[in-house]
Length: 188
Image (cartoon, rainbow, N blue to C red):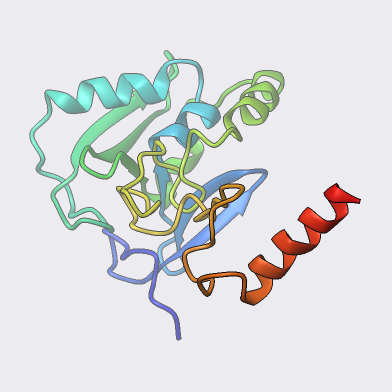
């Protein structure tokens, strides 16, 4: 059994990672609420709605339910497309996540279909963590600052002429044999 991706702030059930059309969310199988990273919400919501929620949340007291990831109290915010309905969501500023209760999903100010397609294509760039959708900021070992999962694959760098760190010294080993063969080919 694997560790859950988070805990539902509403009912305490495990959150499941779900990706639809490149949009990653963490969904509760019990109450159907969902958590979205701020970059994903920027792609899915009407222009400026996610940033507006983020900016408004700065001045709102953290009196909401505990975040499903860091367990800090979230900040309740209302999102509106200018006309009713208005969606009530909760923002976790440390995790840069937005929790949307299931009954509020339909009230979110959605992006127009054509603009959403362009935004999705542009947002697939590696500026976001592939695991949680947060802005890609990695630790020295390549793990995401927010979800602590591997976000950047480790790379082995081989410098020509230098022995590999785990290669035997001298002309022995595969690297030594390859260098010797290459020298013979170049001289002939």
